[in-house]
Image 1 (tube, rainbow, N blue to C red):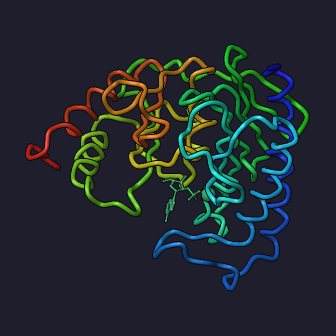
Image 2: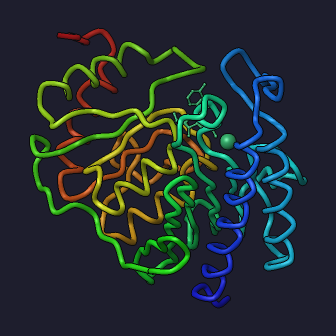
Length: 277
Ligand code: 2AM
Ligand code: CA
């Protein structure tokens, strides 16, 4: 498989889907909102964008299976072999509220290892892309392709950290809040952007030093974790291992990642000892 050429095509498909989403936003209104759950939103835009992406990718690599947020096509339940892992619109709640932080995320994974992918930051026209061994890149305005790298920061106390608030399962909320409180006191600040794929892309290009979230879906992170790794960063689960893609807890960062991991491990694995302040 020629990953370099494949990644160029993934980048183009992500940009095309993003152009569709950007266009639809112009005429989008609240009557288009559908509810998968009380705070889990979707619309025809997510579904149409996914169709467009799935059709293009299927032609590109017919042997690969699919794991997608909107379930356009049969899903590969056993998750082995090659799979396209797709979130056609990451940051749907932002899209619906016209908050300009939403993206397209397309990853190709071999088992639990992402090997190629792109995240398209639709409103900035920045398409982040990478394949294993090829470095991480950002294509701006469809014209300038620049190699990107994680931040040179080495300490938590010189870091800006992104996270995602829990929105469906609240069963680990106290641990999450304990970590948040601890980090508030020892970082440059915390941000909740609302698109995991953008958070990861921004770690890859050095805007954030790190990003962590629990309970994510594989399509939120498949492309983004590869971007961070190819940009020289470290990605682990909350135990320092590599079981993040299909388990959902992920921590990605630059050289200070181990220091952040130590804070997360302290609270995450210690039920009953959660001093919030
Ligand atoms: P989505 O927009 O594709 O669903 C960040 O926390 C991640 O959680 C986002 O990538 C977002 O992906 C997902 N998410 C799903 N529902 C959400 C909600 N109600 N609020 C915030 N994020 C949500
Ligand atoms: Ca989505």
